[in-house]
Length: 304
Image (cartoon, rainbow, N blue to C red; front, side, top):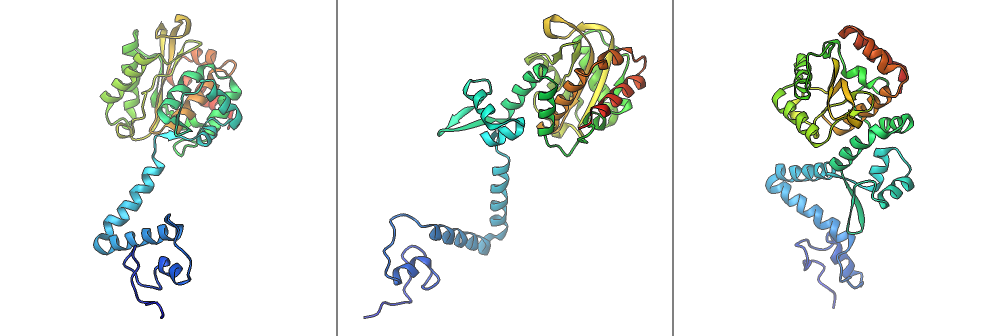
């Protein structure tokens, strides 16, 4: 007696020979107790097909949002962190195992929160040498700055103020944000000023040599049209939380829309600060346009 080749599958409503399960049963092979790869693919296609029949827009939206969520997750894998830092994997793993890089194990796999890594790098950059800063800068891929002169692409003459009429930390931050607002790229100056102040309350952005690089702790794409840098120099140094209580007289406000651009600019500025003669020339600049040219020329001289 022959089998009924038109019978339905017990798992899905499709008749033989379309159903891969029935195809196996008619060849005499026994089903595996586990769902096969073919079945998984088949049922997925069926689900999408049925969804498209009843609500095509919902099906497409589901697939699109699922892909977007995968790309917008808030952590790095060890491989991604290695690329982010521009270092060999074994060196990164050694730092992780020693607890020098913030991370945690999830089901036996290392995960590194993106915000924690950015905050950690911000604290480490002042201690990096020229070589480390160059590696970090090149590893940050950004479409919002020119790779050969990232600072020059975000700094414009009207974003430089020398002298900066401020004598306290709060007044410096306020003056810098107001200077940044000249470009009409700052949509919410109050929110940005508050974010910059909160970042300074968390930890000072002062560098060695009387410099500071104030910035928000988190990126603010909704409050900013384009990334930018504003520079100001006060007539004399003021207390700003610098290393060993050094007074600070030069300030680079950095406003970015994404973390890669932010870290790229911080690394580039760090390289400029370590360039022989740069800080002395910047302090000697008598006017805003003179200071602007000092920064632009030094940035161009560094190259990529």
